[in-house]
Length: 628
Image (cartoon, rainbow, N blue to C red; front, top):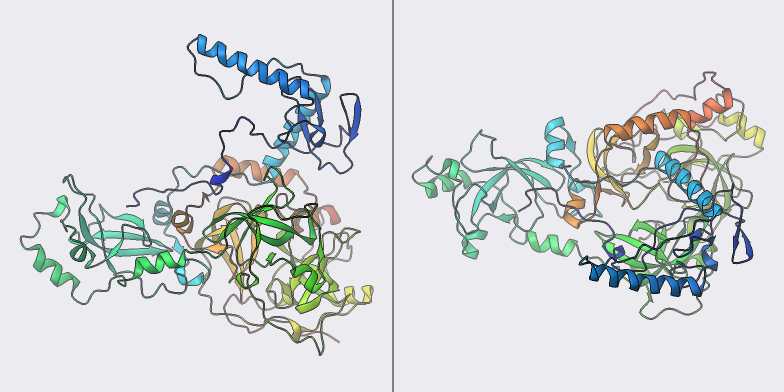
């Protein structure tokens, strides 16, 4: 029985007791551009090569120039000396009656450059901690307590079609009776009793034992899809004893008559409920499958990656050229960011060829039918053209909808989009959206729906007006009729709680809240964090999950940030201006609020505001009329 909140690390495969495990090393700062290593001079042209410190002599050098697979030593002699010293230390420990350590502590000579590099890494670590969300221990967090103490409402499981039981949740609601273990019992064997659902929160249910009436003293939360929750009648069929709780066992003399009266006409779980749960948690993707996925350092291209692990339909992908398996990327198996091998070539998308010319043993291409299908479009008539303007969610800052341009038209309805005013000269931050994507919008979408539109960086004519901008750029707006207008009856409401992926750090799944709804577009707020970390997400995004999903699948949930983190992030957001990152995770680029401060140096202005602020599932007033 789930009597506590249980969660495990999202990457159980990364733990190792090997002597050769190594710490992740921060990129070399620009203040230390040259490193001498064994008489040779290495430079860091891009700051991404990484540095390493010899564990024997303390010499600092380029990681790729170091000896051995793990890059721990600057030379063969250091490696041998370290091994010899380790053995000596281990023998000495045994003689002294101490347990041998995994790594012997060796006296190391610390050259000046090592000290400088260590200090630079320390500073970089402090900056990273201030700018990004770090994994917060989940100990002590309980969805049940969080929901109860704040009277929150959770989004129902039926809102998440991609999640387990999302399409077959049925009529599970308040009042449904189930058979669960009886914890209020002194018997040495495991016994059961009947309980009714008092409140639902995603997969989690607040249960009350039959016979307690209005007494909530022994109410408890558990996951409906857990292995200890059964339909009424399961105990009889399985030969398990039904025993009333000790607190109320003397309340009735004839418990059988009481149960017959209480359960007549009541609903329970379907007989095959546990089987359906099991089937809905079978995932077609398997470790060692090869896929194409967006290159997180160059958004304009894809790379080959290997499925390392599958948790609840989420994939940990390791880029094929990553020898130590640290260069990874997390996404759901239905994410639009992953494709079958050969997809890039078929549509004309940029692709980074791997240095690995032959498949490694055991690796095989994922079948094309496993990937999410996009809607077919007719490109024979009026279609998107290069240079057309539109509005798009910025993939490097998902809290912002920005002025954007179609930079390239690919096959099968795919488009390469660039964010105006902040594009890299080589187009390395162009992003691929399908024409039916819910993340691109026609000119005027933000205005009619009272959303703050982020103007091009450096654009001085504020407030921003689309029609003036189109004339200045000698450009045209993409036709409204080409955009996706479908708005499903998704069932979300403002204030609902859920578990959501932080797409700026996609390994994290966090406690979150729906704060705005614009037709099919949801504004997701991460509880305990500043609004600047909010993200615009589609209602059918595979990165949204019901409350209890992490517990059900064994994925680690990040609870709301504690007060100390809130204070630090608040002060850092006021003092620091964030630069745009080329990586599809990690630091965010400058927010619209900071843009205001930089462009106007404190002067007040406001964006265009539409007359409508409809937050519904309907499609009325979805687009604004274009002026001639």
